[in-house]
Image (cartoon, rainbow, N blue to C red; front, side, top):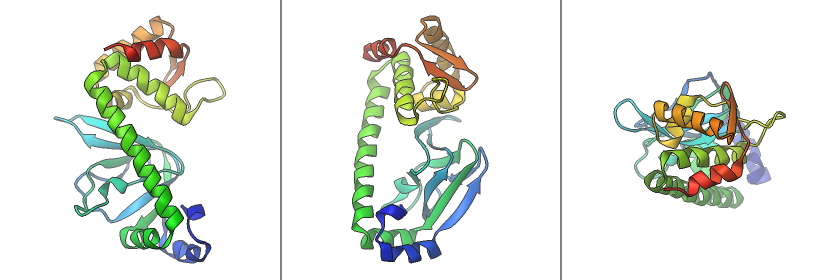
Length: 215
């Protein structure tokens, strides 16, 4: 955020921002709660999720270092339509809503970059909703693994640089834990992936893409 603001705005930003630390599993904000500010992830991971049926959740997005969360609550109806939960120990920079709005009005570069972010996120959300409607479960899981690899990259051993539980991966792909467990085993039998605890390595991206094309 700082690099997108005008130089003479930085002292005001330093005065008005706050730093918070969240433990794994702690919520930054809760669905239905009044919007009071925006969160910028300094270090860590935050899952943005929504209630889905009885005692289920759908993970809409996983935010990493440098990402903004809480923006889905902007607008006339100033209540969060989603929740944000730390997936690991996470540090955030917090800006209250009045100062955030002032920053938007006085910093055109920040305003432009945020607009581009909203546009990109809208496209990704529309794509995910289409996948949920038209792609079978195996295709959605294959698609998620490729997407997460592209977003988070690989670690030194070639695994997706994201430690995610099977339950969270199920919530991210809009399926049940049981279905995810079964399909992950099938993908391992096909030698498309291997796993090590919460880590996954893509071995055959072409085979995953083939599953994505099947309805």
